[in-house]
Structure formats: structure tokens, C-alpha cells
Length: 360
Image 1 (tube, rainbow, N blue to C red):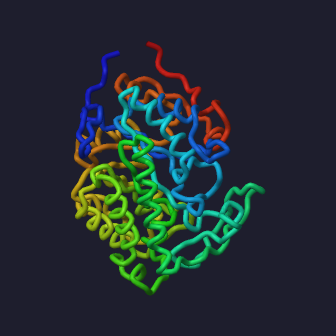
Image 2 (cartoon, rainbow, N blue to C red):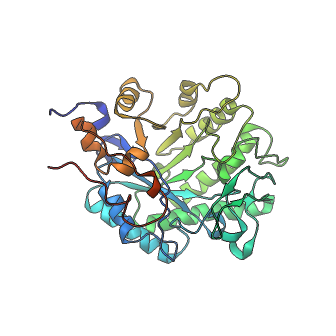
Image 3 (cartoon, helix red, strand yellow):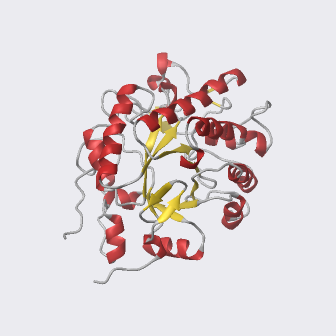
């Protein structure tokens, strides 16, 4: 079968980094950290198998014990965790791949059972999310978080910068700031969770202040051209909402566009907006740099996105989870493996490193 030709498979420059193609492996929680909450040899094998992607973005990595949502995600605050991630970057680089670490603070999407000294999770405001989350003692309702005091915010910002330094020491090519999916930074961005009356609340520009301070701090710790940001303007995951997502996220995109960053990574899935449909071209035009599109893309939609200019690169989640050799399969128009959803979170090799690749 002749290989399919498309701009999707062409090499592209991402700041100082040359990518082999425009396909990105999206960040996906797999919850397989070891007892030190670190990546390990099996983690390295998982990412190495997928290193033909132009860029790999890791699962969300907590920047501190306070930033965790559970104890199963590999973190980036300890030296043991740096050593674990170093196994991953060495394996990916040995295959000539490129990999960014996603920096994460879960905010209110946590529970006292996994917080230091049983403390309440923190958030911009004391607004409890609906629903439950897994804990060491089984599913439990979310609790009402504690609002961060203005004087506490600089310490959280500094934790992101220190995590970026540790990511650099672990050998990553860059980092992605996780500002999506209802976690701490997204909670500051949205007026449904941000009820503050200080400099971090009120107007869209004030609500974006926390994100921008983090991005600037991370850029002071590492070259800004090696920093990406992930946003999810229309995703209601984790009971997140905003009265005017178009205004909120256009403002955030414009402000990010004034920085020399690697990219803006937008999750387009789960359009839960009330009122007018989200204007994606307006959002993308608000950001002056490289755009990565995400959200249920298949080969046909991905090719259309890069050929039309809707996106510079496209990221894939579940397709990469089940198809380590997704680039080769897309090029050949080959059938795709079906994902085993029962193995998405936690466990060992099954559903993690045992998906078959195309026979040569």
C-alpha cells in the first residue's frame, strides 16, 4: 500500500527544536507511578514506544505534594522523581524523539486524604466541585477547597518554576503548563470558580494574571521557547464553567501571544458553552505563535487541520494510547488498534506497553 502524503508528516521547527512531523502525543494520565510517586522503567518503555511522534507530551506531573490529585501520577518535586523521568527522556532521545513534561497543580480536584497533613485542597475561591473522585479509601465526594491567600500565590508560582528546572535536569526538551481541564490554573481563569475581588479576580485580564505569572516564572527558569501552554476553553471537565469563555480565553490567548513561547495547545472537545458557539478562528487569531489542536482528531480531520491552517500541529490522545506507531499507521492508512478502556488508569504492562505495532 503506498504511503499517504500530507503536510502532517513533514518536519517542522518548534522554537529551537526540530520535530520529525506535526503529530503530537497528547498528555494522558496513566496512574502507574511507583511508591516514590516517580516514573520508572515501564514508564520509559511506554514513551519510548511512541517516540516516532513529532512531540510527546507526558501525563500531567504534579509540581508539589499539594498539587497532586492522587498518589499514582509521577511527580516532579523530588530528586527520585527527577531520576525516574530521566529514564524516560534517555529512552525517547535514544530513538531521536522529542518530549515535553506537563506541569500540573490539581487545585480543588484533590482530597485531604492525599494532601500533606490531611489539609484541604486549594483553589482561587472556596467553591466545591460537584461529583466524586478516587481516593486511597475508595470514591469520595469532593470537598470545599480552601481559597489561596494573596500572599500564598507567589510560592505556588515558584513551585512551577522549580519544577521546570527539575524537568530540565531530567533531560526534557521543554515543558507544558497545564492550564486546562478544571485544575488550578483553569480555576483561576474561569469566573465560575474564581470569585476573588483582589488582583487575581474580576476581569478576564485579572483572572489570567495567575497563568501569566506562572508562564513568566517558568520562562525565567528555562528558555521560553521551550514552554507550551494547554487551555480547554469549552471543556466542562471537573465541573468547570465560565459565563463568557470567548472573552476569557481570547484574552488569555492574546496575553500569551506577547510571550515568545513554543506553542499554545488547545483542547477543542466537549463544547458545553451556553449561548453562542465558540469562535475557534478568533481564538487562534488571538495567539500569534504556533497552535496545536486537540480533541477527537482522526487522520482525515488532522490532515484537514494542518492543510487548511486551522492548526500547525495536531495532538492525539486515545489513538496514541492504543497505537504506539500511530505515525506509521496514518502514513500507510493501516487499521488502528482498539483501546482497552479498563486498563487506562493504573495497573502494569497490560493496556500500557503491550499494544501491537505494524509488522515490518
